[in-house]
Length: 350
Image (cartoon, rainbow, N blue to C red; front, side, top):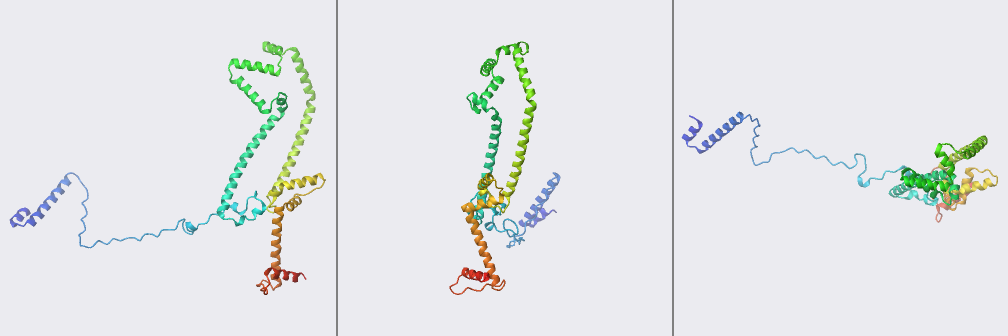
């Protein structure tokens, strides 16, 4: 007798339901095997006992401060100093450069950024000036020719370029007209031109003139060569002397002890020129010191530094008089520290 029949005969509804559920589960398992389905059976759900299952929770890691270990917080992070912050811009006046150390780091960085942009603009202007000088050297030999024709160099160059463009890219009619204009403008001998175009031979008169010019050029060639060699040697010596002088001046200007060179270099040039006109041989150091003393702003800064250095020396002397490196004696009532130092210095002098 099967389970179902036994449950029916027993008349228990609960046993019948359980038996039907077992039969359905067995039938589904048979169908899944026949179709090749291999899905894993679901895990049985935990029994509800009224208490929540305990789950292990890992402690959350503490957030690290921004910037990594060993760094200051973002709010207190200081700006990284740059190498340019150590020295004020050389274009500033001396009395203004004395206040450089009092500026905040952010202000220094902004100033150096502007100075860098300004230097880039100066470099671009210098390149443009160099190109202009090259064009000026190119046009210099032809200025008398332009002046004789009543034109400046720009108008003359524009006319030459316009004629070249027409002869290269113009129409046949434009080319003929341009050649006719050039013949009339420069006075070309039409008879000689016609004979040369006809048979490729230069007429006798033109040939004789060319022979005379060639003979003169051949006889004058040694003299011209000697003059040219002398000019080249003289130019090379001048360039060598100027280069050596420039290197010396550059080394002098970059020396840290010549702090005010950029402020007084023009005054130095005037002083050296005046000394040379009088036949005096003055060094760069003497010219620099004289120029600094003649500049009111620089002389004021130098005197202030010397006064501070002198006061510091007096303080050291007063400490040595009072008995070595120990603490200095307290000034008497109504006596200032400065008056005490000056009195100690006077006693030491006596």
